[in-house]
Length: 253
Image (cartoon, rainbow, N blue to C red; front, side, top):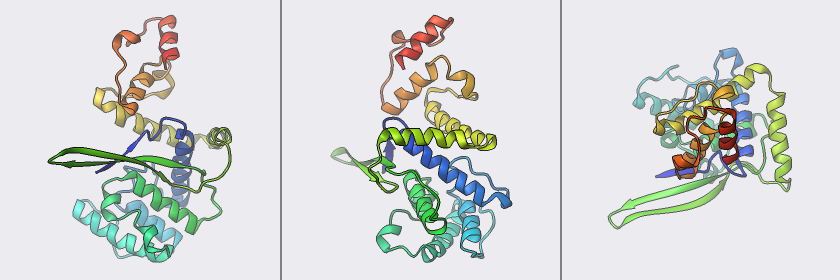
């Protein structure tokens, strides 16, 4: 079993978020005429619907598959047909396409989904600028009779460059500021999805980024969930009642 560690927190998080924005924006622009809107790369790709339409639009291939597959069996069957056609269109070597498969995509494996989408951008729209130096920390966990063994490694998603990290952060902010209001809404919805997915274990939900992040409480709890530690309640104000307590929580963040 594999999972992603420190996915959106740390020195690399600006480039990762920019990669998400660029890929989501690319999909939505490509499928604008189909009125398909993607908000989450994890939740909107796995069933094959988006990939089916991307293949039809970019490679002009119309496959004999159901438009909407409702069951897991139907979805994996559809994904198998789509990926087979995609592999022929991409023309990649065998070792490249091993980074994703039907099971990984259908299981909402974000790493496999990113690899596939990046390969599609490079093939069908090579002029599209993807953020460079994007990498993810991958954690492999093996459970056996002798115990649990874990292994970490870093996997590159996009090509590396010698540009400084400061420039990458500036580019990420510039990219967000260039988006039109509707696309900013899509980005905010993607961020909310990520936040709520990680806060669900605490029984908390964020519905308004503009107001609920202001006092620092959500950020403190989110960082604890991402980094695997718990900030003791005595260290911050869980329900700050005045500006001084809010400032204290934000400073702790």
